[in-house]
Length: 227
Image (cartoon, rainbow, N blue to C red; front, side, top):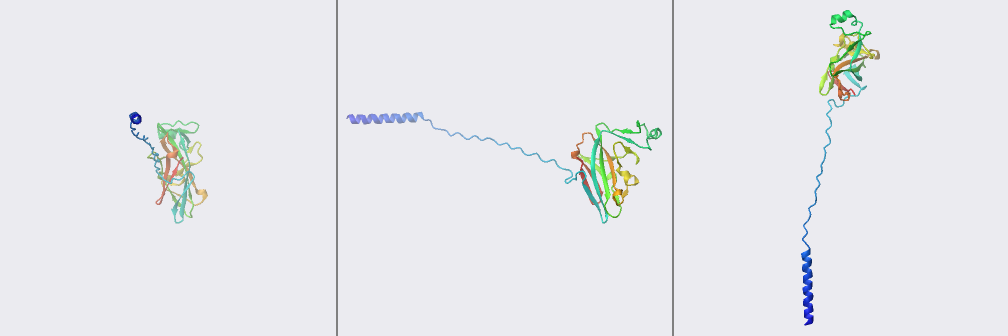
């Protein structure tokens, strides 16, 4: 009888222990994994280039056909807030009075000023005849500056005898005859047309984004990056 009592007591104790264990353990709810959003930043699109393959300064552009061949080079570009010039045929008070208001000649030089917010861009070009016959030279009106989506035409000086302070060459159009409207270049290194063209542009111009574009003939157009 004692043995049965002992077994019963042991069974009851075992059941109580088991129930206590069940009561102390709460069901575990799975914790969802935390998803961290990944933010990707798209690389900025490259700025479109208006003239892909544009030449650098001092690079030659060939043009012409059938023995009438030449090369064009843009070799320098500089921005000036103003420039001084002299002209034997224009510096006298009489000549200035005929032209209008006096330009304020000082020591033989006149000072040219741009419009407010602008500056002068001097672009230096060199054209050579590399063939055996003379070639038709592109007129200065065929050279245009392109910057920030706008096109700028050259501004002419008053005459072929104008000397710009600090510039050793003359304006390009007076090197090819007929006032730059139509002219020719003869073969030979001594006949190279080496001169400048002046453009009035924004004073804030960034030459690394400016181009000189020229139609050299019916088959050839070239562009140079100016900075």
